[in-house]
Image (cartoon, rainbow, N blue to C red):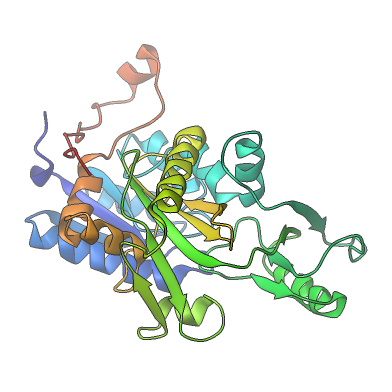
Length: 328
C-alpha cells in the first residue's frame, strides 16, 4: 500500500463558479493543513488548463476544495477518473445528484426523510399563482446561499425569479419552513454532532455565512436529543441513497413541532475559518488537520475500468485509501 506522504497532493481550488472566492479560502486552509502534516502539496486553480497542470506537477492524488459548478457537480470528478488520479469525496454520479437540489429531493421521495413541498419554474413560464406564501426560491445547482430568497408576495417572487435566472434557467420554489437552522456533517457514513446556526440578524445569507461575528454556532446543538438523532439518521440516509463518499454535510430546518426538514446535502462542504463541518468534527474530537488528512486517506477512483483499457492506459493509479479511523 502506497504511503500517502510519498505522493504529490494537488489541492484543487478556485474554479469557474460563483463560489470561486470561498473555494480559495477552503483550498488554502486545506493546503496549509496538509503541509503541516508533512505532505508535498501543490495548489491548482481549476480551469481549462487543469489537465496540463496535473501532469506538469506530477499530481498523484487530488484533494478537492472546489465549490459549485465544474467542481462539485461531477465535472472535475469525471476528468480525474479519465486521468486515473484518485480524488477525495464523492464520485461523478453522486456529485451530480447532490449538486442538483431537485434531483436530490426526487431521489429522497417516499423515504423517511422529511422534505418541504416544492414546485419548479422555468424562465419564460408565467409567474406561479397557485402557491402559498411565503415561498423560498433556490437555484437548483447553487450554493453558499447564492440565489436564495424568501418571498412573501407575488412582487417579491417576481424579483427573486429574475435574480435566480442570472444563474440558472430553472428555479426551485420550496415551501418556507420557519424554525431553527441546523446542519449535520457526515464522515464516511457516520453523522457527527449537530450544529445549530443562529444568525445575529435576519437570515443565514451569504454575508452571515462568511463574515466572522455575524452568526452564532452552537455545537452540539442545544435541541431535543431525539430531534438531533432524527436529523443525524436522515443525514446518513441521504448520504447513503445519493451514494456520497468521504466528508459531506446535510442542512435542515427544525420546525416548532420538532421535525427536521431536509434542505440539501453538500458533497464538498466548506473548509474555511467559519465552516461548519470542521466545527462539527472538532466537537467529535477530530482536529481540522485530522479531518483534512482523513479525507485524503479516503481518496480513490470510483469507476471500474476494463482490463483491456487498464493494460493500455499506462501505469496503474497509486492506491491511497487507508483506514480513516472509527468511532467518529
